[in-house]
Length: 463
Ligand SMILES: Cc1cc2nc3c(=O)[nH]c(=O)nc-3n(C[C@H](O)[C@H](O)[C@H](O)COP(=O)(O)OP(=O)(O)OC[C@H]3O[C@@H](n4cnc5c(N)ncnc54)[C@H](O)[C@@H]3O)c2cc1C
Image (tube, rainbow, N blue to C red; front, side, top):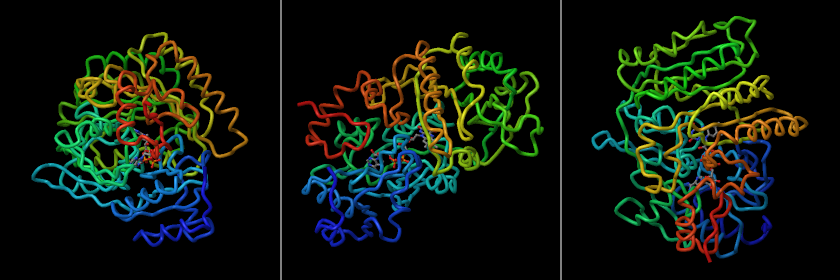
C-alpha cells in the first residue's frame, strides 16, 4: 500500500515535525531518497527528515494511525536497499549524527544517523574505538542492529556485543530504554534482530583503547599465488591471536603508481590485515603472511585507525549497481579454496570483490543464543559483492554471482549474516536467525503485532 503525497497526511507530518518533510518534486527530495545501491532505487511518497526522538515518535504515530508503509534510513547502506521503499514514508535519520564520548567510563552515545566515520572521528579524539564496519560510510544503526563485523571484532566482539543500551521508539509510539537491566528481552532482540522492533534513536557503546595508529595494511598477490596463499592464510588464522584480523579479498588491482602496470585491472588476492595490539608483537604475528612468496605490494605499516577504517570507501561508492550473496563456512578445506580460485577470475564488474572474513576470537566466545545474532561457531564469513555501473550488465553479473554462490554452497553451513542478505533473499531470513528465529517471532508479536516495521529482513509476528 502506498499513500498520496498530496493528501492531508503530509500536512500532519509537517505540523508535527521539527525537521523537513519532503515530497516528490521538493528540493532535496532526490538526495534524501538516495540509497547506496542504485539498482534498488525507489521513490518514497514522503521523506520525514527527523531531527530527534520527538520527530521519530511523530512520524511513527502518523504512519501507524494512517496505516502507511514505513521504511527507516540510518546510513542508507543496506544491500537490499530497504531504507527506501516505493510509495512509503521514509523515516530518515541521516541528519542525526551527534556522538558524545565519555572518556572516563570509555563509553559513547551516538545518534542513529551517524556513520562509522562520524563515530570513529569522535572516539579517536580520545584514543578510543568500538568495533564497526570496514567501510566508514556504513551506518552505525543498520550495521549494529544486524551484527557489526570489522577489523576489531575478533578482539572485542561484534558491534552489537559492545552495545550497552539503546533508546527506541516502539510501534505504539512509546519511547523506551533497552539494556541488560531494562527491557532486557527487547535488548536481546535489538542485538541482531535488525529493524524489526522499533526505531532506535540512539546507541550507547562500550569503547576500547585503540590507536591512534594500528599496524595494518594490504598485501597483494597475483592469482598464480592464490591457492597456495589461501592455504597458508587458513593455517595462520587457525592459530591466530584475537588481535589479528586478516581478510582474504579478491579485487581488481587498482592503477596506482606503487603497483607495476602489468597488474593493473587484473584480479588479485589481497590480504587486508590488522593487528590491534603493540606493533612489535604485531610484526611477529604478521611475519608468515608477509613473507609468503613475492607480493605485488606489501602496504603493511602503522597507520591511523581512522585511515584503516576508510580503506575501502573509494572502492564502494554510492550510485553503482550492487548484488550481494553470502555464506558462513565452518572450515576452509582445500576443496573450498579450489572452488574460490576457479570462480573468482575474471571478476566481473569494476567494483566487484569477493572475500573471506575470519570469525572466532571474541565473536566466537559468546553463546549463539545470548543475542539474536546466532553465528558464533562459524569460522569464516564468505561474501560475493558485485558492483557495476550499467543496467544492461545486470543479468550477466547477477547470474555469475548466483552461480559462484551455488558452487560454494556445499562448503557452507547453511547460515547467512542478515546484513549481507540481498533484496531477493527473504526466503533466507530464517537461516539468518537459526535457533533464535522463534524467540524473535514471539518478541515481534509482543512489540509489533501489526508488523508496522516490515521494510526490513522481516520476522513476522507469531499468531
Ligand atoms: C559498502 C558496504 C560495506 C559494508 N561493510 C560491512 C562490514 O564491514 N561489516 C558489517 O558488519 N557490515 C557491513 N556492511 C553491511 C551493513 O552492516 C548493512 O548493510 C547495514 O544494514 C547498513 O546499515 P545502514 O544504517 O547504513 O543502512 P540502512 O539502509 O539505513 O538501514 C538498513 C536497515 O536497518 C534498519 N535500520 C536502520 N536504521 C535503523 C534504526 N535507527 N532503527 C531501526 N532500524 C533501523 C532498517 O530496517 C533498514 O532498512 C556493509 C555494507 C556496505 C554497503
